[in-house]
Image (cartoon, rainbow, N blue to C red; front, side, top):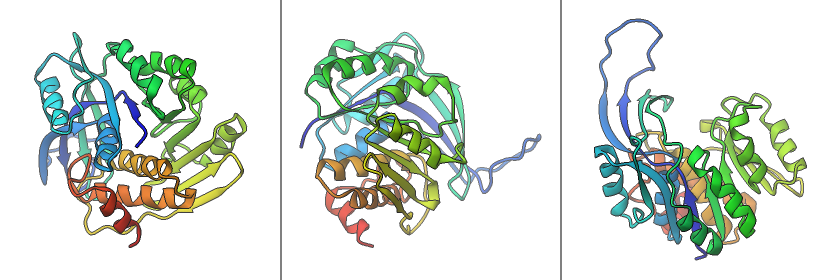
Length: 292
């Protein structure tokens, strides 16, 4: 399969599960479970794409510290640690409070590094990859110019984008395909239409348990419901799994409606596990879930 390049997004996170997210008041809470695990959007996308048989490289920045060591070890198991760059800055870490409905309150306990990628390595991989998946990190910004100069298509994920936030603009301007969540966009359809008017090929907006919407450059509008799940184990990484399922289907030339269906299947599989990528995920398992 044609090579893919994922840039940005590896963290070591503490996940604390609670029956409900806490009210803003002093209190004592009892967690139902807690653990530390690999996190963030680059790791989630790369792991899911790898599980689906894609030829993928992951370029990210970690610290020379125990959290960085843990990330390196977790990704090395899947052959994805080769292009992790060690920084003098501490490894990015989050503490995520999760409720029984899958809602998340994420606390950045250690912010991401501002720089540190091996730009010679990213240039080499961007020159030969089919799609550049460039995540919204400051240290990934130089790769936008690299990919554009090489003519490599850029896909980006704006996550819970809030309209007009200047932080995201360079990624919006550079990308041909945009994914985002509607959490902070009451009129998400208007934003999607604006992106298409500005020349984007595809815009996909996810709505958590309410499914997803797609708008293509030819005016095609599609809606996909969320697929049923056997259990909600952990919603972390669901959006990255959705993204990866879509990419896999798109690379295999499925129609857009099927791409959305396979994306929804990947998201459903993800939340049934407590990892960024369900260990049961592979291409046959994805296709089987999409037929449910």
